[in-house]
Length: 262
Image 1 (spheres, rainbow, N blue to C red):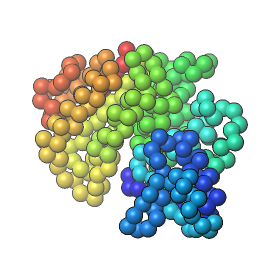
Image 2 (image 1 turned 90 degrees about the horizontal axis):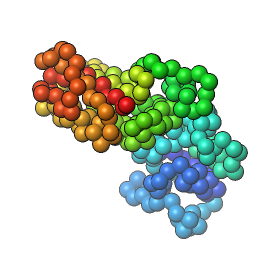
Image 3 (image 1 turned 30 degrees about the vertical axis):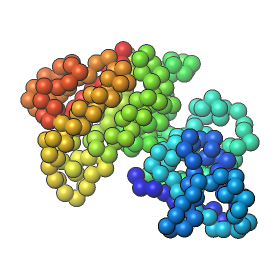
């Protein structure tokens, strides 16, 4: 996901954007002072600016994802901090509206998030839930939001931790599936060609080197262990029968991994 630049016409709009983003982002908001330099938007920076712009701010991938999650929370009302009216919500919504207009592909799909949330309804105080479901994730923003706001936390599973570990792998993976088999699971398909990658070139079926595939499988296994996954199930062309282990015997032959949290 490339950096995204949002333009604000006045200093007041920029100040509102800074206030809104500070509520949602841990990282500072960069102001593109010119095409060659950038500085963090601080109060001192705002004080030094004129009343009229235009002013440009730059959002990297992580900031876009965080703001997209904020939009989803505003739409669905799932965030505890946003369940009651807040004076900053209008500013947040204004920034997110700009994000939605500039990069709609960066926003999570609320229907998918709501589906996952209903599947884990018993963890949200809802009367409806499912102990057995699965759904393919359409994009990284939706995947991360489903983990953080849909599953949230269940047994050893931490949605925030899993999103931080596996979200950055999105472009290197193929199909990503999230679901529940009594407890949470994610299933990750390993691509054989660059065309099959989520972030790959869809015009050419260039084979992925075995070493790259093995490195991706190893990264998934390490992340799964860090995130306290109770089981890692492999499907491999070398051994088509799924088996549980912490590492596959022939990692470059693995085409799917299923991580399950008890």
